[in-house]
Length: 189
Ligand SMILES: Cc1cc2nc3c(=O)[nH]c(=O)nc-3n(C[C@H](O)[C@H](O)[C@H](O)COP(=O)(O)O)c2cc1C
Image (cartoon, rainbow, N blue to C red; front, side):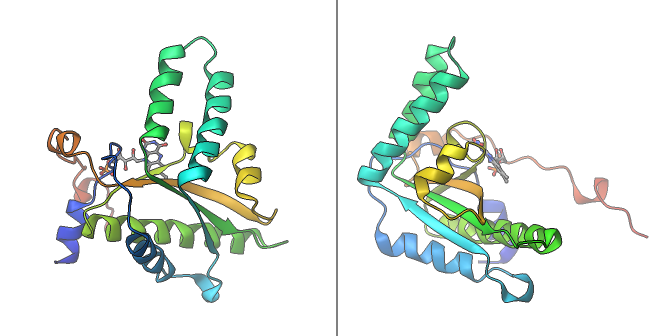
């Protein structure tokens, strides 16, 4: 497939079938991630794969977070928890912080973003549904997630990936992707 077609086909997919994702397919995504560009080959990414029993513990953490964050919105808490319980796999992606070098730490984050995008494209190629979450049940900015994955202090969480086989009905009812044409975003100097 041409790159432009793969890019056009990639979507954020948030509803999944109740079906396990094969380990080889998860590994394919992880391999794709490690091929991303990385300044001075620091390869700053790490991946924490959450399934089965670990996912049950993630659900507990998400519940704690949601009840704290939305104490007066039980329906939102319930629907958000359903999102977690119906997602077969989560992958937390971190970036290495470089001591006393803010620029390198920042560049590491850029590299990890590239890695996540590579995983997203690979998932699309395999027919897997994928979304990068930072807000809400992605828990990216909640320090408890850092403790949960047991990452060392020098790793910053960049994204929580939700992954699974797409729910066909939800997939068929998705609105087409909309983007502003590049010429409205470009200055030719
Ligand atoms: C850095 C980043 C954070 C995101 N966080 C969330 C999120 O917390 N929850 C969510 O549902 N989608 C999240 N998304 C997915 C976007 O909402 C999605 O890419 C956007 O709606 C465009 O849709 P498309 O990916 O299908 O083109 C995130 C995407 C990026 C790049």
